[in-house]
Image 1 (cartoon, helix red, strand yellow):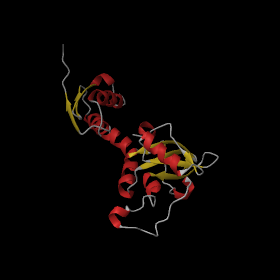
Image 2 (cartoon, rainbow, N blue to C red; image 1 turned 135 degrees about the horizontal axis):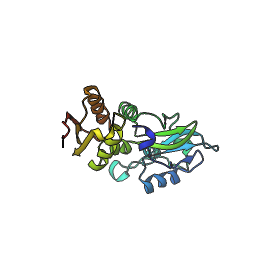
Image 3 (cartoon, rainbow, N blue to C red; image 1 turned 90 degrees about the horizontal axis):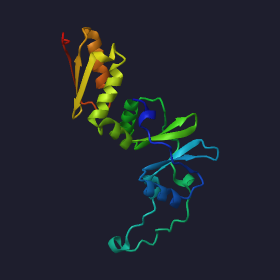
Image 4 (cartoon, rainbow, N blue to C red; image 1 turned 135 degrees about the vertical axis):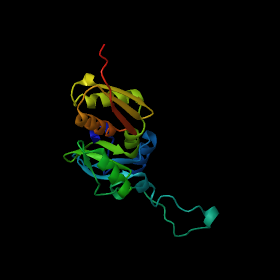
Length: 204
């Protein structure tokens, strides 16, 4: 599955001159964890995350730790002062399995999807979770049937799915095609198990 199929879009961005308060409000109101940062020409230059906006902005509570005379009051700040740069990106045609590995290995919460230097979407852990786990069995049947149409006659296959377990009945005779069908089905996000078997056509 490609990034374009599961990414969140249109993408909400901020510029380097956006205020920290405004960026924080955008995150809170929309339930985002990060915002791509663009320059005046719309080119991606960084990303601002919840951590970036929180860092250094919550002083210790004097009721707990006592007075802290050296704690300074933070003045107004711009996104360019706190953003993370450079930023990892993906293209719309990237395989989400690679994106998932990158997020896990590098502890990245989201990845901007770019076309050239311009962000066109964003891929989050929630997007990947939705693609991998949260599926309706009926939708899986439709997607599996679409994939199996690439292997011989579409009428050759009977597909059912229950709780992510795909049951494929093959009314054809080519064993290699059946193995390919099983591989294609297993690659559909949300499928947790594949059962493929030969079915003798009813002579009547």
